[in-house]
Length: 617
Image (cartoon, rainbow, N blue to C red; front, side):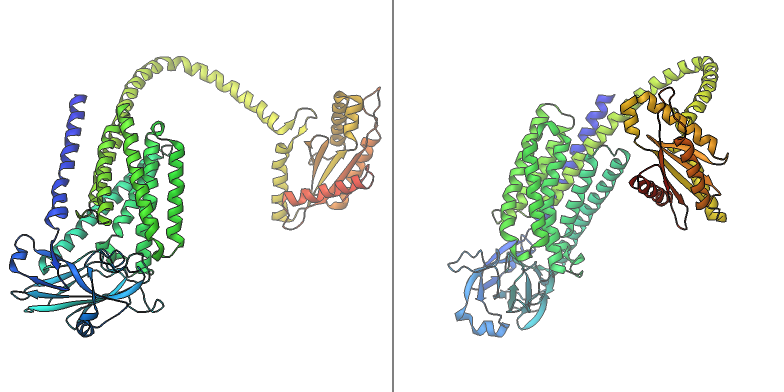
């Protein structure tokens, strides 16, 4: 039964993966526009051009005016002074003899002739780096950012748009003024698309819908992984996977057709660009870390750590450098990303060959995601023109990881069921033994009560001098502070320390030293009141708590105790003469025990410095 269940789950997994093939066809092939190449800044659109596709990419030779921001009429008058440039790829990647810097400004113009005139036609304006103004004939139609011939006056902006062409036009010119001071890529990187307005709006709606679906799936998966981490905080894999999903979410949220959600926020173009690049630079090392944790033995630690450092460096570059410098690092990191993806695939293949749990499914999901990621990289660099599929690859990767995770939890569930059956058997045995244990428990309980009494005495008393220790005296000190705060009942503490006690131990031995401490403790106990409390504070040091006693009274008691100890030779027949020094302190307003003890300790230190065998306050 378990084998059939596993086979069925695998079959359902692959069937679900196959459901994405129509999406790939829809967004990668069916919705890709046809191409209409202009010649010398002019193009003629025939009805037959729309037979296979409802949209056309206006590529080919656009008229180009470098370092000029011309109005439509000015551009028409200056046709002889124009050069030509492709309608995609930006101006610095021009295939013509002239090369242009990414930073600058220019004017694009294209004359379009429609055989049947415009009927429900529109232009889809892509993201243009990094500010533009678009005109149809002399009429201003759309803009993004602030176009200027100076860097100080220019401002970047995201404003992809769909612009309707006035009905009935048979000829019109498209004039685009572009300035770029904030990006490594200037000009038209993606062709402007001409087509049926309804088809363009539908395409835009479908792209937003699929992005919202993908972001929802990523967010749900991240929350699910965080719940798994909460339930098993010792396992970091769900936490890292949640971070990876959130980075994918951030990248999907900042792609071109979703930029409307962030374009109005503070930062606009800069914020969107930085978030988009950051999700890429942080996503690659995070993905590597996820696989590294999942199959630790198969990955090389030094290589992984190197990639983590590279990712942190590039992420810091994005955070602290202007967007205009992102070009060259991006190209370098694309190469690094391809290397890392190939490395991950090779290591997962090794894990699969060793029959590591879930490695086969993870390999399939990784192949899907990395194939689509490689497609996007090649599509971005212009090597291929298939469209962007990485978002769909993310879903495939998430499904494979979810399958592995659920399979892991199913195994844990089966193990729990087996353990439950064993526990039931053990419980039956325990029921039979419970009656015998009850009697033993009662006996043990009595023994424990006696032991607890002894332990309490040991915890609170010093075994050598039979006085309180620090812990035992704390409850009386706390009570004295409470009475002082409640009814202003003052109290004092006396800190007594034997003089030259180390010499006694060195000259007569530790046994004699113990007798000195025991005798001194007995003398102190006999010289204080019943409500006074004595504790061995440490080594040869004793602390006396004197409730309801002012400083003068405490000083007198301390001197009496000092004289009693000094007058009594200890350790007959050796007769060791000893002396003590002491410090007295009385509680003050806003005192804590630490401040009170500090004053007593300082007074004791003063007595030591003044020659010992004396009490100070």
